[in-house]
Length: 305
Image 1 (cartoon, rainbow, N blue to C red):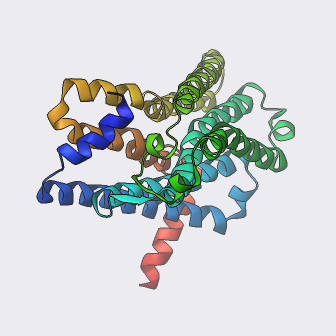
Image 2 (cartoon, one colour):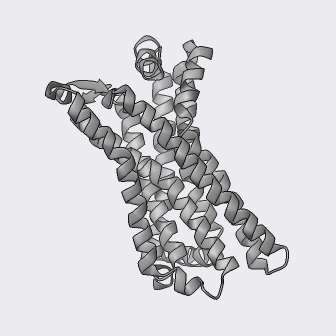
């Protein structure tokens, strides 16, 4: 039995009890509201102060935050639907899955770009202003989306070509495997994930060791940048969990068939929610400049109440 069949089978055969289902949904909703509330505060701080609007580093960061908010909202909606409505129209599911895939694949690419910007700022400080402009940063964000579109949209085109029209009017348990069931799509997904994994990690390692070398002979900023790259690497590691998720789900189904729904829930929290919860910590709270303006906004809100 492949993992996609296992995902659907476990929902039918091992449905959670009402109390367990409510508990899982409450945990997911509370986590998503907390993450999005913090991220909304970060976006508000970014929009209110021009110092951030003109800085490529913060532009990339806020793109990551917006991307995370969309991704968290979509995956939580799909999580709740899986427990309430259970099956939805394939066409509606396609929209949810495509948007979730776009934002999921954007995250590691965005982190790689942030690592490169950090590397340029430390290793080429005199050329940083010329290389990392606002216009080029916006173009880079556009390139990130184009890359994700080129990676994901073929799934839709293959499905449109291979499946009858009635399929898109049917109802399915909303997963990537059930919405885009062609086996060639799964092979393409695995190849894409491997390529992403190799490229992003090469960028992370290269920038880290170059900054590490600079930090041994240079400023305090270089050492801070080195620590930031380590945090990027940790976040990328969490994000990459989504790339090995199909194999992990297959293994969990074989090892713990009766507890598979709990294993899927743990995978969801680790692979989807946890990476999005630390973006705000890495830049929004850890960055001194952003933290100072964020405190101002919070104090202003408190004083108005």
